[in-house]
Image (tube, rainbow, N blue to C red; front, side, top):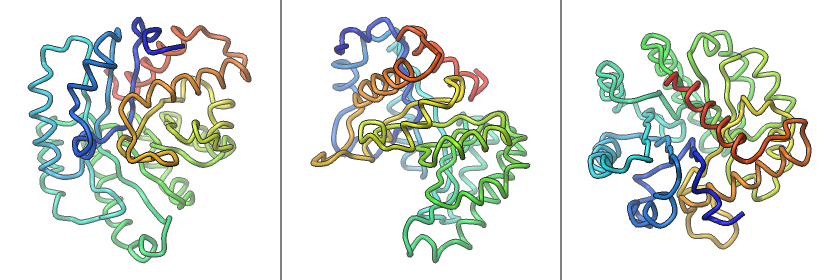
Length: 272
């Protein structure tokens, strides 16, 4: 399947960082080359500061004439840098319905330096969780290690309209357990599939398609010798996930049906 084969399909990138990506490439050049012929190209852009929000607002203005392009946004305090200085702006965005979800926030215990900041991470998480409950918005969660925190907060998380676990990296056993506790959960996978990560492969293989989304996390999550992740990596991610489902599951759908289900999953997540 080459790039032209995607032209009739809806493609959703459920996690991307346009502000950081702008350091490497111009969005419109890539869009015109790789995405303009798609039936629908949906991006879910993660933001963490006012300057990132302002940058995206300008980009959205420039792209208003692109009928197949849908840009959705989430904003939150990232657990790797849980500064409280952006909370007032976050609540302003929520009050004025200027974002579609609250995220990405969560817990990052991947390194010793992150672990030392656990008290601030937990403070930031609790504030943002309460805001998402109060404003009844979906959330995008970032978890690297710290699985116990998902279960600790499951009772509150299940009250939300949608919960997206961005770059989920536990096994299908944990994913199905979480889905059992938080029925509104979706699990997103990216280039870990291209790296043949066993846990990601098992999740895509064994999770119901109705709980799956795909992403690039561009410009992050690079493969070996890559300087950055490009937007069009989403095509390889889609092809990889589809092959897993086609080869190993009973959901013997065409690629068109597969892409339609993922697009519908995203709409359900955001209740659009």
